[in-house]
Image (cartoon, rainbow, N blue to C red; front, side, top):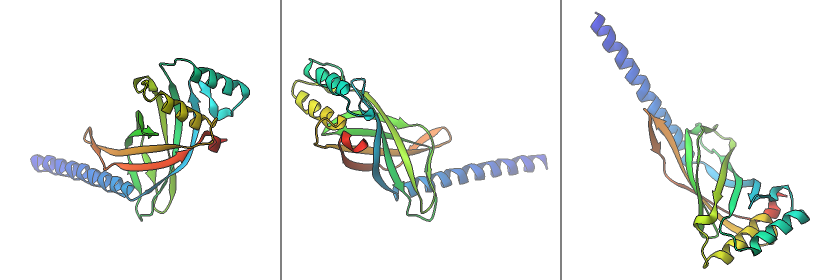
Amino acid sequence: MKKFYHLFLVAIILCISGCSIVNSVKSAYELTKCKFDYNRISDVSIANVKVSEGLTVSNIANLSKFLLSDFSSLPIDMIVHLDVTNPSEKTASIHGCDYTINIDGLDIAEGNLNSPFEVEAGKTGIMSLRVQTDLKSVITADNRSKIVTMVKNLSGISSDKSKIDLNLKPYFKSNNRVVSSISIPVSFEYNGKQSK
């Protein structure tokens, strides 16, 4: 009788574990049906100049001085906010999301949203992705002017827009393994004046 009881408990645990995996897969699949749109970019800092606080004379002077120098390092920090609209009748959720960001044709960063994200059926949620990078690995003599133009666009010094391409790779965890979903591309244009 004891043996039967133990087998019964093991069967229940396996069933619950299996149901959990199936639910995680279904919720992650629902996220692939969601619509991802640009919401805003906040907390932009370029070369340690906080341009999100507005283009003050001091900020413009500091950025201009930096761009005219022979810079070999360019730290960029910002938060990209995306609207995630769930048209489904089921909740969409993931355990996390890896992402890459490309600005004006330059692969500038990889990152990770290392926390659960969920959007209820028929609702819109905001996914916020922190981008922290130093462009020293991509700065070359050939693309230096392109990087200067990108900085002017992101800061709002220029009135032109930069093209931003995100590639999202949502994942869920199961039995201490990370299982990735399909890639979700999101593209938009941005100028620092938009966030003012």
